[in-house]
Length: 302
Image 1 (cartoon, one colour):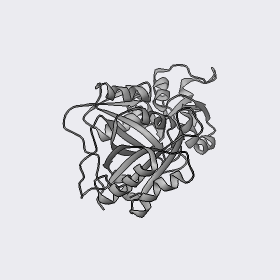
Image 2 (cartoon, one colour):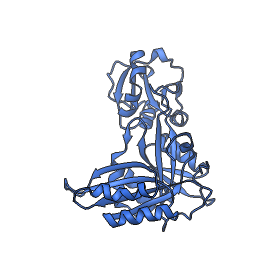
Image 3 (cartoon, helix red, strand yellow):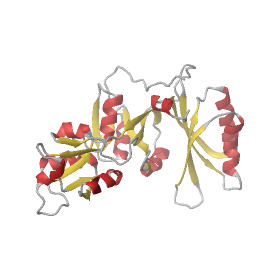
């Protein structure tokens, strides 16, 4: 089975991401767009706006994590933007225990990081009797440690007894020592990113590639509405990889559904299934159709 990488242009571009330099989103930008400048943004909405306002050509946005689940805010933002999903990237999360140069593991008494990162390293921290301190960002914790800015630690703990959990890129950028790599309790932790861009329509179909098609739809408030809307994918042999639902619009009745499908809209079986979806659904929007990332070759997704 052929699984294509996301192909990028040769024109220099800016790639927007949410977070601080050294964040996992920054690392993903460097992996997918190694020759282009990654621009840090304060929040996801700002990263998306940079593309909408032609200040960046792409936005690298985390959609879900194999351990922590979906990124809730993104599902609220996707219906409000007209950007297309033009690619996906799976980034392995390698949590590293970082410290100031010359500091050993046994010297560290406290560690700061994002709550999700701390939770994913809970057992390892307990094994070494290290106190966890929640922060807003993994890379920001590394940056604060390197610049010796005060955090929520007790005053008697010196900076040479403090650590941070972040990426190898954060260690490189801020001159910190990697005390331990793969510090997380469970291996295989992976974040799926989507690449957003301005684009009219979907990518032309190439029979040599496997595709993922992302669709956003709503259903009428009636019995079996979702069952009928999704039935066409079963009868036409289209594999539905993911189904997410969430409330929007300030009511408890209307739900948005986000589905990822294996296939391309120009394939006949997908055309038939989408026509059936449009018949039973209230609204249907194709968010994008893009080559499946090579990570999916290792799984049963496609």
